[in-house]
Image: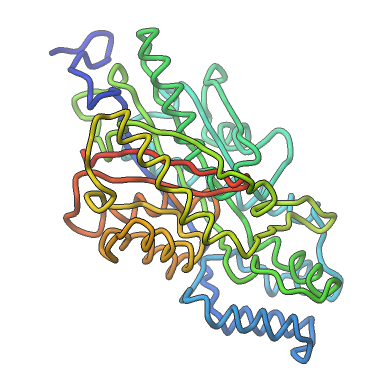
Length: 382
């Protein structure tokens, strides 16, 4: 064991030689509770309308105590009778979204003991912005990243985005190992769902049908760093070892989870089948990864970093796999205190899990998104 050209020549970490070496999260300061959302809804729409009554009921029964959101509710653009449009949301994202992402990246890089100029690749993802140059470029520019750092911006991944970006980062790092090159891949996820609340409410008012988006989603940014063994130094931390990963699509589910572009913003469509689809789609990828890794462990032998897409989704997966509340403690906690932050959520759960005291060595990270896509990875605590 030694160091050559500033790169560790130590044995590979785990079966792939890949590690998550740092995680960073950043949230807006404002925390919205059920009372504040109800007040905001009733400011623009009559509480006598049935769709409003249904939405308020969902809001009260969501079991989300608070959600981090941008404090837009008193801003002139967001508090007038005429709702803001998609251009207004884009401006907010390119200011506040980039700032949150920048701060999350700084935290992840600091924990990884990696300087900005050492980053070899960026993989970014968002479901609440579609502008170009995209999140990857804007954050790299803020960080002062070297122009040669390779960049990828994922689209269409929705709530599965955090895991999808981690999977792509792992594939990149593994290919670099094959080429005997160090890989330090910065993964960035950012969502500003609060900028879509008025759009969701306005469309609900026009159709007289309630929509779940305003009740579930929150704002935030997450970053993590994936390194191969050639990039690790003696001082490099190892938060999780990345053992394997997979992606799959639940059959006949294309229209059950969608994000549609509207003149007012991005609208989330969730069918009533989503909790059952999520619960029914986790066994197959788990068995696939178990077989590929030669393990006979059951789902109960793992802690789970499950995307907190909704309380019924968490409970549905729990019932299907026979998991304890303790195995899902980080998902329940994140859902209660952060809501659903789409692509950011699964990384937030991974981070929360490692600060909740001793747990199982093996961890399954899993997220669901449009398609209906299922992203899953086998991790180990380092």
